[in-house]
Length: 194
Image (cartoon, rainbow, N blue to C red; front, side, top):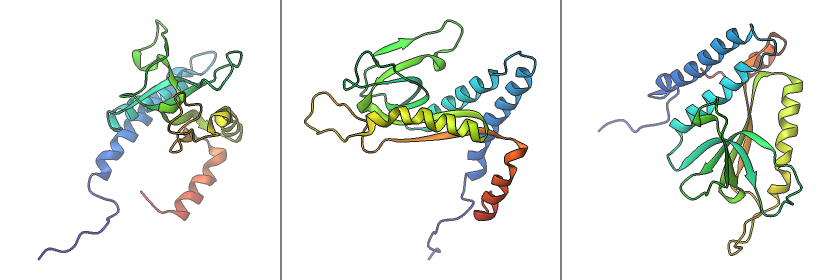
């Protein structure tokens, strides 16, 4: 009789899975080098967002779409500004796309879509470098979601006003500058993973 399986760490396929992380970070590093020649260095941030969206699109089940864009609720007045989010994960099998913002100089992956609130499953804000000010800015931007988090809506309600109860949001940082290296050392001490 064979031995009963138990959770292993690192598990089978873990190293192969991490190659995607390396590919994303390599693309970011190349963009960062190119951006050094620019007067305003934002190119690497755009690449970080695009690479993360590309990876999520290939990783998540096909039911889920990944886009930059807007979350639209009939509960918000038309006079209110609609915030733009870096990464929206939504149910692409069920969601209508309310509008598309195309920019001729970016790929289809970078076009912004407007998704009805009830189909949104998650939002990620992407920052190229971890810093106190970047973290505060990203968190402040995620607070734009607060009016949409007052649900859940009644299942019988025809027009949904709020994000689903299973909605989640988060921040992704690509680079850790020297000033914040101590956080990594603390993290590695607290959880000695790979």
